[in-house]
Image (cartoon, rainbow, N blue to C red):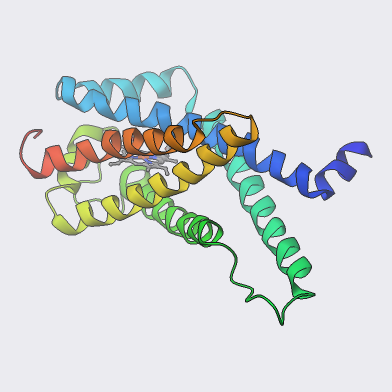
Length: 209
Ligand code: HEM
């Protein structure tokens, strides 16, 4: 009962956003570090992928991610609806647009969501990949980033993720009372963007083949 009452409150929903955001962030960090294995040699990514499948972490991770994404989305939607309803009373005084940060988060979230659907069809299922062979991760990645438009799609999505993380990390660390929260948010966003984007740009420029 108490849990339900807490979830109904704004603070409860914000806690859900923070916890699920932290879970998704952890996944993003591990994924980004895993991708960097491409710089250690042609077989490294394929071996890493095989290892993850062999130790059976793929499906539990997918299941956990699905729950985290669903809760993150529902809590965000409900918080927006709540804020809109509360502001509605003062409609004549203030446009119901939300702050710059709130709008960036919303649209950033939509871009990331659409990207993940394409990304799964591209590199997990393989139907949107020029090579598209299951388990041949290195070859699939290299086939992708020969094309400037694929590099562009990934760049837009990763930059959107950077903005999303900058605000999310800032907001979470500020709540915890960290005084340098703004700098931390920016630093995290820059590191994550640079880490992810190094792969498409290394392939596109021929550094990795
Ligand atoms: C340049 C950037 C990226 C590269 C090169 C990349 C690469 C990959 C590859 C190769 C796979 C498939 C692994 C396999 O064979 O199973 C994959 C899966 C995945 N990636 Fe990425 N990724 C990138 C960015 C991202 C971003 C920004 C996100 C999240 C916002 C993301 C989320 C995922 C998810 C959820 C999966 C599915 C994992 C599964 O099969 O369960 N990726 N990525």
